[in-house]
Amino acid sequence: MPLILRAMFLLILLFELSFADSIDDDIASVNSLDELVSKMNRAPYESRYRYMNAIKKQLMEEKIQDRKSKLDAALKSHQENVHSQKNQGSIGNSFGRVNRGGGIDSNGGGNGNGGGKR
Image (cartoon, rainbow, N blue to C red; front, side):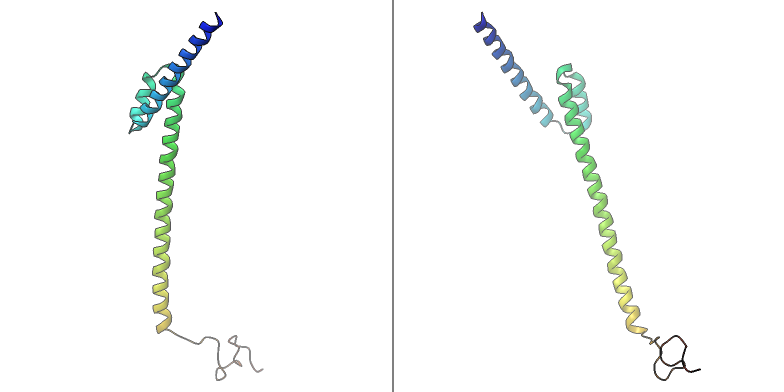
């Protein structure tokens, strides 16, 4: 009797493993989230969690891609702003050089604060 039970157990185990592989293949062949949800709804109750996990994984990947694209756009915008500010700053500084520190000839003793001789 134990031999028959073991054989039945092994057959059931092999059937479940082959069914599990078919679910993995089914999940891998899906291209859209809607299709994955509809397959989950048609799946047996015991295997729905695998479809749910695949849905969660796909949603996480979409969120990661969305965040990455937003960060890339922000970084590109920041780099463009920095680049344009450098160009504007170099043009403004090359034409408008003014000595604001007060020299020897200026009133106030040359420290730029207006405090000189009393």
